[in-house]
Image (cartoon, rainbow, N blue to C red; front, side, top):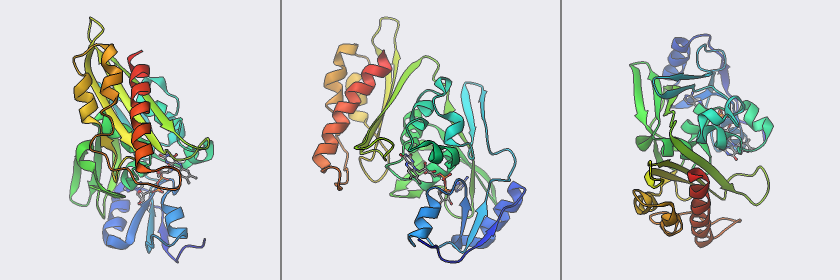
Length: 278
Ligand SMILES: Cc1cc2nc3c(=O)[nH]c(=O)nc-3n(C[C@H](O)[C@H](O)[C@H](O)COP(=O)(O)OP(=O)(O)OC[C@H]3O[C@@H](n4cnc5c(N)ncnc54)[C@H](O)[C@@H]3O)c2cc1C
């Protein structure tokens, strides 16, 4: 449980942090809450020689509403957002991440850049079709949620860069639900579902988003279920949810077989859609 030796810096500005990250190359890692990176180092599954702590860099923490979007600083902690009804699925999912100690340290930027398909916020980010601002020595770029998760623990952020801000639409006219199935309270998700529903004036489903946690090597959109519900009445929810596991490839583990996870995805999708529509 003792990590390999590493150097540590805590720069006061974003420019200094980017310089340290770019000079360190593939051996340097940004440090946010440390709740994913440090366990990996202690297990010797990661061995960066330089940690660049972003905690003193100004302007990276906080939530603001602007032009129909939430702008969330990458260093905003789960605890800053948990249960915030204005944030829709972001507030719902952050309330279900582990325990209060983890939520007090873990950040949204760290969760997205880490790219664990069993994490909760990557799924919400995909459902919301959000975007991530990434700063590097050559300037900033926007990474759309659809381009973000390339493979297991592999994202489009890359080396020598720092995520600075997450943007998600405010979804004022939508209902949302994030449902997570765990064997024990506060565990990682065996499967979780983010569902978002926008109803038309006649009560039918004008638009719908569904995304799945831990159903493959990245968070996944359940597009077949979305297509089966869009434009239909709420009585089509149960039949649409039957399509939720199409195109998924969930890993079997000590908790569940892939088939059981597919079953969970269908059941949770139905329940989450009903909750979001209500
Ligand atoms: C006991 C335990 C239980 C947990 N349970 C859950 C759970 O149920 N659901 C869940 O979603 N998560 C869970 N987590 C993970 C937790 O949410 C982490 O905090 C989160 O995944 C990573 O955020 P962090 O701020 O700690 O990132 P760190 O661990 O500091 O960093 C993670 C990775 O992201 C990179 N990184 C971090 N910030 C940036 C940035 N701004 N720019 C570029 N790269 C960056 C780091 O270099 C590193 O590679 C759990 C963690 C623990 C310890």
